[in-house]
Length: 288
Length: 288
Image (tube, rainbow over all chains, first blue to last red; front, side, top):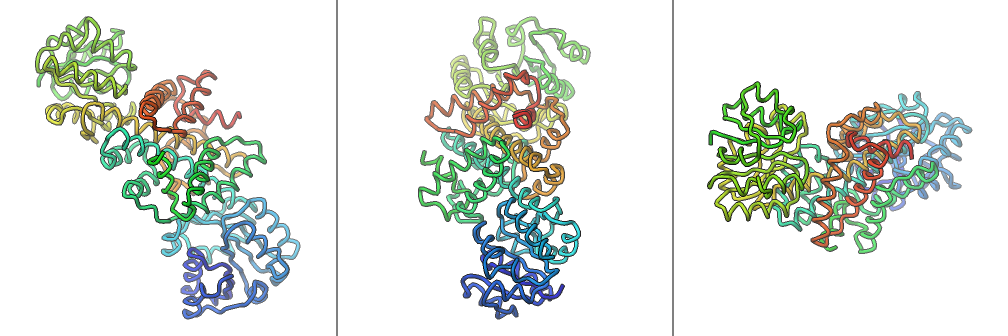
């Protein structure tokens, strides 16, 4: 593989695309708002006016777009990847999207002799910038191995999770664990503040034991400092929780913790916090 | 301080008392069921027939009993510590109990020129055995310093959290964070299993990132292995959550995550899982 297409140059996508460029790949890019591509073009990426134009020349195309509707358009639209990619092209969706859509893409791709992988990531903007993402991959294992050199430019924890959709499902597991824990972190802190404790001291005491978590260590101090700037947007988290809940409901799997987290985050969004970081959930508790 | 009284020799208490004995203190012990004391007596502890008999001779008395009712009896009963301790004695309650009761003990102790500390622990039976408990202390800071040598026999993370009750409140923060996170761990695993993922592989992938937590690393593998033996009993966890919820309600602090956790654990207890370990919550999801 020498020529890689990259579709979607948001905060995450741009950092990921840059790593491919730096690794020496020829990079074709398309994104809805062309100005987001300017600095990458100066660094050597080649602009294409449509998804189809990217598809026609690339050995592999990576997509990192907003939500499942965007994914559907990029893959199944009239100018989309399924219709225009050359036989044998690898199509890698790194957007966090619906597992069932990943399966549809896989099947449509297979009919046209294309190889599709779902490969959502975790690690946020910092992980993307530093090339240290966790990448959760679903699809044929051979296709995974073929694309491993691309993944290794962008991540450090790269695991094939199973057949098509398994990458998305794994990402949902990640989001489910985070969502419910975030409630616990907020409630522990709110309790500390309301009972007059020194919340920082409490954090230092409980972070290293059985109550410890990444969120308690990294996000709780931001909550206490009133820093609600986005590492990960509330609105994107709500999207992810919606996908996970819908999948669970389809399986008749009752997830009351996740349902509560989604409800609380929706209340937060209604207060105008859609573009705050997920740690802003704390605002529901301190203002309660 | 040379002579220490120890009341309550359950799994935790006995390990804690043994450390004091090994450190060279003269140890007076009382526990409801005398046979629980037998090995400590062989190791050099001295048996006393009542709480009052312990109180009359000790420079400090440590209590590690079952629940707030037991604490009340040991401190305020006719044969209790408040009535029988000598002036200047340190009374240290290490039971996880009500913050408001800790304040009552502190005030009653002060009137009799006794020094009371609330000092609940985390770290479980292993932490107690290894002398590596986290000890969260509330009460006068001078009394904390005076008792530090005793604490340091039993723990490694020993922090004065503030005035009387602050130790118990800090322990509640710890339990709140654990309770809600446990739901997230169970739901992430249940989702993984129901969607046909390799749950062990998913755990390895997500444990090191933003979804990571002590429970995900240490308890999720036990859930998958079907190991529901107690590190910490379901029934004790329900007791702690009940205390935290009552305190929060008194402050008009709404903690829906904690309320959900308590409800789920009560459902679990109703199924006969009171004496299982807290990771048995997973049974609600796999059998749902």
